[in-house]
Image (cartoon, rainbow over all chains, first blue to last red; front, side, top):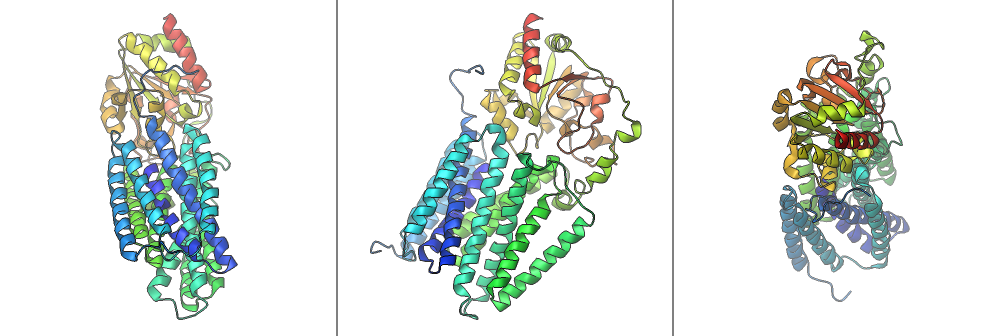
Length: 66
Length: 469
């Protein structure tokens, strides 16, 4: 599920289109926040998914905690 | 910018990106290919983003650069620092900001187009309002889900009298405001719509608790997908439409499947039993039978002997195990038992943990072999032949009331039938009820023994005692 979570970060495309053509200050502020939000979604989503999937990798040497 | 590409080449790139996303999602569905699937999806995303940057529609880059820089720092930092146990609320948070972004895009487009009333095409207005509405609901709903999972808010359902009526009226009012915003094309109505939708998102998630949390996160995930797809219609952007629809569809399916795993319809999850639970919780299932019901306590030593001389042991991990970070110790215990010839299996309830697949991730972190993990349907027939069911920090998913007691708010949810095994040992800190705030009759059964203490400390004691046994 976390994987699809990253994919709706595709709104970043929309946020960039808006940010790249915003004229008024209000639009710029809205677009800036939208770009930040969407980037957090994309970057965080993929990284977190990758970290979780890494857990499933067979590790060569099972380590004891600590 | 002189190096701007033609719309055709951008559309071709979007098509390639979309294919990558679809292949990525497909590969993510199987544990063996999931990691590469995630990479393929990320590549697809990168293609979509790069070609968008080359679009002639973009006049200035500084705002994008600043936003991406800030977002990357926040995203990387939070994704790296978060503990495995806290993953579900992190996913909720990422989901929320995605929805928020969709709502902001809709608001900005609305502002840009409305100075010339009558200029906005009706089909755009519809999509714009839909993005604003669903995106805002997803944003505030996800934040409440985050706060609940992070235990900033109580995890149990929060309800007040007439809540469903208030929610219903608010939703109808939002539709009305949407029509006003669409026809008047006045910014004030857009603001009212956004604020109202934020409030609605809060009210929607507040009454939901316990085992329903993963379902809600999955639903909000689908919402954000739909909001993103809808902004695609506003901006006439195929990558957005396809990407958003993919998430919307797969998220909706996952939500329905999870609902089915709990034998509840979506409407029931959102407005049903758990929302109405407080009446039952206030007069808990155990209430009629009194506080004086007796339970049996067991020492780590006795439990270890029981485990060591058993032939079949099933471990039922729950969120308590995750919180205590005991997954490594549990594996050590399982290894010791296996060395003594005990057959050890893990029973994974579909909603174990706080997110679909959460428990699998945690056990995988501790190198528990994947074939030892059994889904509910596969493990339930095994319980009557099981000598000891060891329940570590799980509660609601083992509650026999879900099977036997039509009065219970859990009634109808498929559970792990641990009570059918010869012995049940519950590792738990105290007799307090679970996340959903519902008492568990299992603890008082004759074949159940309680091993009190922090899950990690208890398992450590068991390991030491099994070594000595």
